[in-house]
Image 1 (cartoon, rainbow over the protein chains, first blue to last red):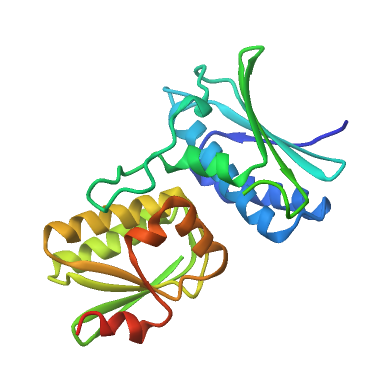
Image 2: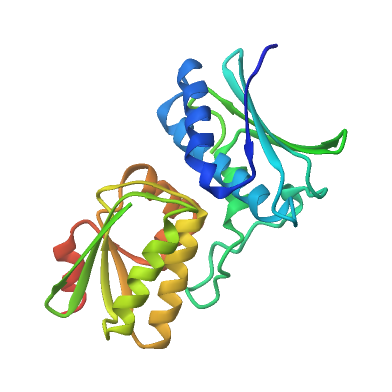
Length: 141
Length: 111
């Protein structure tokens, strides 16, 4: 399956370009607008995490690969940085009062909630986060 | 992202339009912190024109809310709708903050 890919430096300033790329793929797959909105949030959370933590020296790249398959859109976010599985992080407490809530920790929560399937693998020196959304209203969150 | 604020009686109404993401959220936090430094502690944040918010936006909101709590202030939200409302709900923010259907309703809570 041929995927569309986009590679950019792991810098937050590329956020909108990365999201724009995924949005184009989502539109080509005729992804439901609500699903698309959630996916774009998941992409921001994953991309920003790589920008902040994958490359301690601040230099490195992120690749996005998108393809449609059946009724699903698959997006893989790949970096060559420090081995790190964002899915190993616990979900935050979303019930606490204002002063009890931790500042942060919501990123991985959104990745999980906004996707229908999400998996991590370490392969050939890369971290690969695979996010799948189904183009059906009855699945996912 | 565009931020406009105006004093309405007891509170300051802050309207945010566009995107609150990892790039723009710090500007929201800075704007609110400047208002807090100027003595404002009661805020109505009006989000009818907000198209997008991520965890970075929520993080900024929480930081402001915590700063206000310490000062005896309050932040509430008006016109949070659609997909932005869903993000509030998924994160639990929809239940820890006062949410109102109009700026007038928010202002009424400040007496």
